[in-house]
Image (cartoon, rainbow, N blue to C red; front, side, top):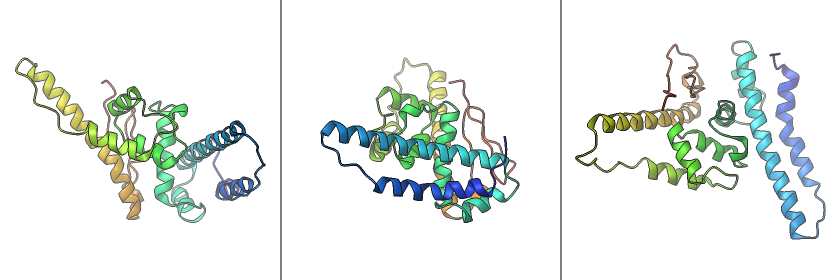
Length: 219
C-alpha cells in the first residue's frame, strides 16, 4: 500500500470543514417524506465519513515512517488522539468482521462503545436487536452493566468443569473489554505508546511494547 503523504493528511484535516459548508447549503423541502429521506442520507454520510477516516488512520499507522503517525495525529488533524483511536477501533472491528457496516450507528463515539464489548457480548447485543443505526450510547452502557452482573450460583446438577470454563471465559471477556476502555484513559493522559491498538480474533498489536495479548476465537 502507498504511503499517505502530507497532501493526503491535509485533505483529511480539511474534509470536515468542507462538509460543514455543504451542510449549510440546504434545500427547502415540502413534505415529511422529503425531510426524512434527506436526513437519512446525511446520517448515512456521517457514518461513512468516520468509518473511512478510521480506515485511513489504520492505513497510515501501518505505512508511515516511525514517528510520523503520532506527529500527524498531534499536529495535522482536527481531532484529538482519543477520537482518532475510537475511529480506528471502529474501522478495525468492521475489517475484522466483529461488526457489520449496516449495524453501525451514525456516531463514531457510540460505535466505539460497541467495540468495547467482548465477542460474546456482541453476539448477545445482536440477538437483542441493539446493533442498529438508532442505538443510543446509554443503551450500550446499560447493556454492558446488565450483562456483566454476577451470575447466579450453579445448581448441584451442573457440571463443575463446564461452570468453571464458562466463568473463566466471562472473566477473560471482561478483562479484554476493560483493556479497551483503559486505552482511552492512556490517550487522555498522553500515553499513546501504552495503547493496545488492536484487539481481534487474530490477536493484539501493542504500541511501544513487546507484549502480545491473544484473544481466544474458538468460543
